[in-house]
Length: 242
Image (cartoon, rainbow, N blue to C red; front, top):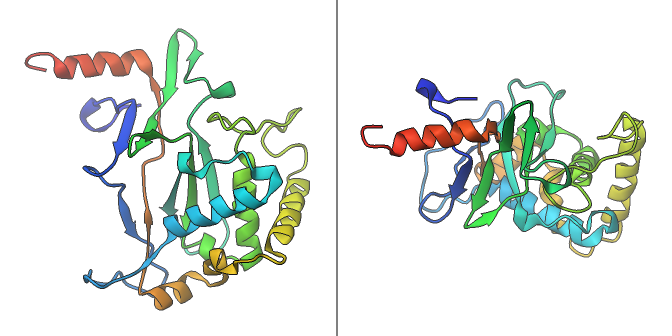
């Protein structure tokens, strides 16, 4: 719950003109990050994925509730070169029914709030790279649909909840993914502008070589923090001699 030297993390993280969103290279196996040059135009994975997700939400009736200006798209580096493991995840930044805080025992907790250019984000959509990029094309799109479908229909910062014990994927994850594959086929068929998803047709090395590099946004995973403890820590820091 605390950062280095016992400091409690802040309840809010903000990025904007004065503090841009942090970015880093997505380096496939066998490649090295190039020296920066003024004319470099690497593929911005986060921007390309944000455009794709906005297009998906605009064309898929089941995902019309997703409002991408309030979804922060980032990546986390793959821990190994295996194709198997985490591909992506969506992190809700609110609790059930969009509540900002939740009580657990005597303490009230809050998920860190993320703001970009003054706009509060309600979800963090994170891809594991380069692993995600090295999946087959259709599997990548199924993953995109899979994660967007987790976004609650009310778009209030909470996840979609299914009835019964298996609230996240319903009672059958295979059936869940089969439905996502069906939505993907409907989306791709006769799409008027395939360029919006064509970047997913190549693997990480192919994309790297084509664009001279791949970059993406990297932000910390939001922390669950005790509100009162953070307030006390902030007050101590602001006090004279704190």
